[in-house]
Image (cartoon, rainbow, N blue to C red; front, side, top):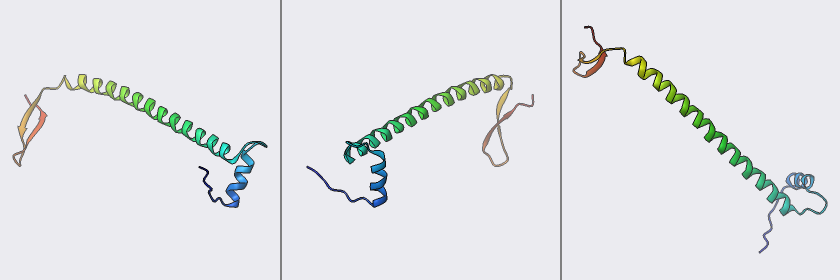
Amino acid sequence: MITTIQLSKDVKNALDGLKSNKETYEEVIVSLMKIAESRKREKEQLLIEGCKVMSEDMIEINKEWETAGSDVDWEWNNNYNGNKKRGRSTR
């Protein structure tokens, strides 16, 4: 089934500039859609790679903080309004 779509003259002129002599408007539009999908996949892959790097960095930072906290003797104290609060030992 063939469907007709309305385009402004500016869009039609832009499509004319993108197509070769024998290329149809449909072929130009399909080509643009493929390019858009490819770029979308590239962006998603870059985002995934960036998240992996951030995750690795966060794991390293967490390891550094775990070792830093092991040198301190912590105990639970009651603060002024009855809530328990974790703090440094004064021993």
